[in-house]
Image 1: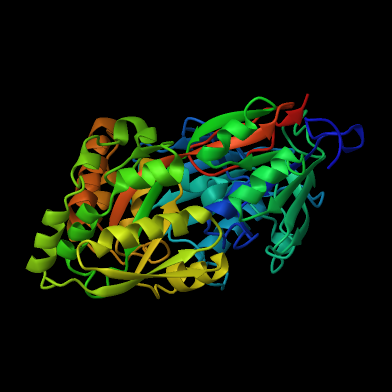
Image 2 (image 1 turned 60 degrees about the vertical axis):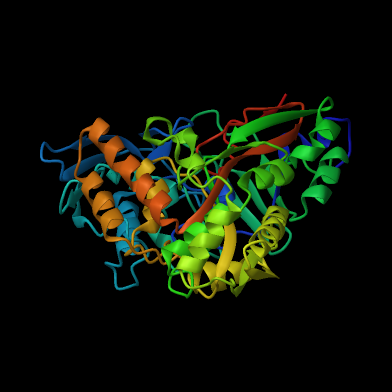
Length: 485
């Protein structure tokens, strides 16, 4: 890219280049699981509802809705005048197709567990869609955003991954594995006047240091930057801080010895120097956590848990001895290469655990292999990753439900936790919901299926003529209102 410091020449007006750490796992929104995927593809898709920056919801494809007094029947009025990227009008048949596909009702495999509580789906007329639940669910509307149930056209069946089509502000142009994902403006977008950008090009670059150089050379317009390089970027570029609302963890395969012993997991929690990770890996731009929830979740967050496992090497040794490992043991930590932070964290963990007799080998694998082997295959002993934030407290914690086969890659199994997470869905009183969610956090802190380290801030560097960037409580580069001034 050529031009001035702003990185935008007249011949490239309203075209943005955004650096992303790695490829999406899927372009099909019903198969995608990686937060890095949704960071990009949410620009192409919409659900019945759209998450807002504060974690609340607003109507999307659904123009309005009503809930019956018993909390079981949801009636949605579908917004008229919406078109897909291929020019077809969105119809009630596309809504039915979307949810039949997710629920496995049309002969295919079930793609989501979020709708197991749905008793039936139906249409009343050309613009009215009805979902009836088996029992009330206080989190149900959060299942109806593009994060969980993007609306897709029936006419594109069988081609949703190779040629994704949605109703969002940007349409798919081209995907070059290992290189880029290119989107263009959806000229028929239903929100009048949006988007402003003509093109969005997501550039894949795993090396943070190289990404900073690309920004300084005006080869990209927006990228995450390491904390220790902020001083190089400030001045000529905008630097913004985003609370990630994620949980950075070192976690274990709960089905494998010795990690099936809570005392071993607690010992590792006492041994890991979390503050050292925050200071050395994130230059202090992080907030300690003690469970799988960040302070970004407001009233739902239970403060104080972050102090339970303050570093105590002697306590860690005692717990290991009580568990039958007075001399420690050997293990392996498998990390993805798509972000340097994981290897850096693993290196600190290796040195910390050496002090209590645990010998850890670091295995670095490509992102796709990590997803296949660790996340999906559960073929690992230890790993480190950051679990993406979600708009709702339930979705932040539900990874640990024993029957959540899709997301519970730690293989955590705790009867009380499962019961708490089941009960909260039946509770309509917000104060009582908060009590349930805080008890769930306590259980995770007691049982420690992971070492909960921090919610780290994302530091974004961008060319200084860009406006309209937004932050959400989950990973999403929302390009809808972005433009070059």
